Image 1 (cartoon, rainbow, N blue to C red):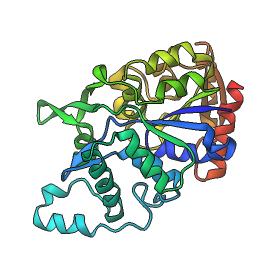
Image 2: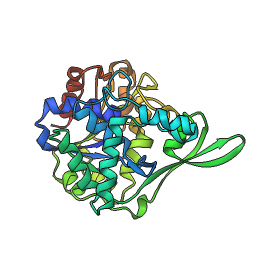
Image 3: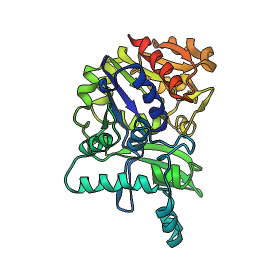
Image 4: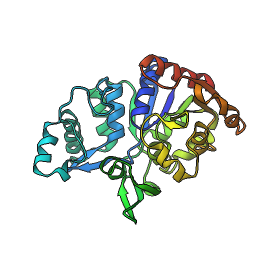
Length: 313
């Protein structure tokens, strides 16, 4: 079975480890959000691509919840001693090697797709990881700060300001003129199953859908599109979907997250605690199944992945 997955970072990484136990990894193409990519200290940082890479490469720090396991932060700590304002984006020392390698290859003329293949090969990953586009797309967040509306890079909002500001709008700068990375549209057309991973709909999946051609592929292949809700019991398992979904005009529930993908979904996996709203989702023509979607280990992630497969096959 050929699978294409649209992925953000941590939630997607957990899910994909389970998917790798349910289908042969070499049959899976993962299309990863690059809207929250940022240049720090002259280095190209791809947070979602790197999170998925570290999860699938068994290098992710599960206890800390981000970055590489066993990493140290001596370089960033020393930078903070020079100027704390320069050290707000906490880069680990091992993580820095990834960004140095990526930036050097990009400067030599390689595309982001080519670099991503090199990085995933280094971690022994059998799944095919593709950035959503080789062209720059940047998620920008308009917030109210000290009574004034301010336009911020997503990482400034999320990391530097800790998502404390009221969000007025979100936009994906550059998306309209971006092209899907080579292989993205083919993977979507040829997939037996397309999965929307349990990632933040607004910050992680919407930037992918904003690249011309990708949403259209999902629309006409809706019957084989299955999503996993990132909202459990009215709360996101991680991230700030509860801050951003209302900006998109939908409620912070499993039903609201499904509504965000209106016209794209054939099936939706929700958590057991949300069984009571399954009927509401089904009335929109979407098949629904419920299970424990809190993926505390790979076995639980496999169960979620198999349920998504069962809803489509």
